[in-house]
Structures are given as C-alpha cells and as structure tokens.
Length: 197
Image (cartoon, rainbow, N blue to C red; front, side, top):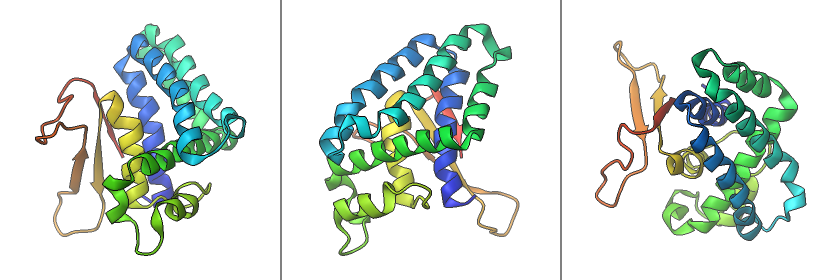
C-alpha cells in the first residue's frame, strides 16, 4: 500500500471502527473531542479556525451521520455513508487534511517524544510544514505514527499494520499499535476495537 493510501486508510479505519463499535455515546464523545481539538490546532499550528473549519465540519458531519444510523445495527447505511464520503474527492481531501493538521499539532505539542525521528536539520516546524501539512503528499512513518497517536489511541482503537514486503514464506509481518500505560501494558486491551491498515 502506498504511503498516501496508508494515511487515507487510517482515516477510513477510524470512522469504520467507530461505526462497527456501534456506540452512539462514543460517537457523541468523538464529536465533542473533534470540536475541542480546534483550539489545539490554533495553538500549536498557529492557524485561525476559519482556515480549517470547513474541513473539520466534514469530519463532524460524517461522525454525526454515523451516529444517526448506528442504532440501526449491522444492516445500517453507515458503511455506505463512509464509503460515499471517502469516494468523494473533495470531502475525503478535506477530512484527511483536517487529520493532517491534528497530526501536525500533535507533533508540535509533543515534540520531545518525536524529535529523534525527524531528519537532521529539518526541525519540528519545518517537518510539519513540509512533510505533514501539505495536501496530497506521501505520509512518512512518523506522520502515520502521529495520526495513530492523535486519532486512534485516544479512543482505544488498536491499529495493526501489515507489511507486504515480499519476504519469503506465507506469513506477513505485522505490528499492533495501541495505547499503553507507562509499563507497556495495553490500556484498552480487548475493550474497544481494532483497525487494520
């Protein structure tokens, strides 16, 4: 899977997993969390809300639409709603760009945790500006990690990355990324949901 598709897959998996969990309360909490992250982006990225509010609104609209159909169970239209939005280039680009801004803000707010993964001489601000924030650019490993850390871990979604690296044998290499406590024990082990990208 290309690096561009990996970022898209993480975003899609976020919505798909929330839909599969089927909790309207959890979806309402996510709507509130996404709204609260507005000031986080303003503070750490230096952007005024009007610059990204339309993009944030696409995320909120999709969360609201999933919440409105989640009570209908597995036969609901939520799967088709997610697919429809992600197949609409304008909407999916808006959603992914908002997620890029979240990843950029997360990097800046937690730069001590990530600075060793930034190429020499680039620095946190330049990495954010040149590698994370630009639309329709490849997402590097650090960008993918940031998306998982800001988007998936806070809601207890574990992510399994499957590497299709053409290694010999029939087994694929995979890595599960999930929220852990200070001792490395998964916080939400088996409780919430998982996404495969």
